[in-house]
Image (cartoon, one colour):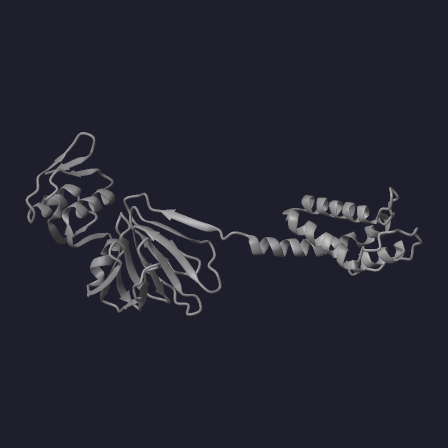
Length: 323
């Protein structure tokens, strides 16, 4: 095969023809159009450029390899002069392939929001879903949801008002359960140890799925409370007033038959104060009640003390001891 024919094959692989040019014979008869395409494709994939400088470097390296393959005992075929006119087209082809590759491999950009304040933090996701994060809660979600799903991950407690989109189910993942919805209003609370997740439904419908466990999915209706227990791999459902679970976002603290140690921990998080309980048995005593967040903590403890015999002491460092 003569060099002119090889020259034309290389240029045709970039969808261009060149002027006739007489060159000496070469002995590399195995070089084909497919081989030239392979070289360019391999170089593009291996280097994966992100800017024009890298693209130019790839073009230079691609030329160097082609030139090497066309050389015969030190004699280099002078194709570069004629390839100049096709460089722009070749660069466009390479750039298009590169950009496609980068877009396909680009990692999903995640947003992580953690409410470290004592108040409530409100978020509006890109799909118009409204989220209220309680103090201590953390939510992670994609900056832009995919075309077929809307996954988020939650630790702590949050209330969701999910924008309806039947083509993209909204999923809340906790350490204990996966909650699937289309459009609805519900409250999710996870225990600090991650074993228990409570879901109280205000409107719409949700389904709870426990990944990796031989437990059937459970659907709940408005006015129901589902408790997923990762420890014993169970999901229980009971009737509940959804307001009692979501009142916190209205700046009201609500406790429904909660043990005192849990209530004190919640108060500590809400008011940003360390509270220590010195009586373990007392901590197991349950209590039901609700308090406006505007109430001073001392007044809240006084009200609780009317039902549970507790004594409290404020220390100089701002902490509270209860016995």
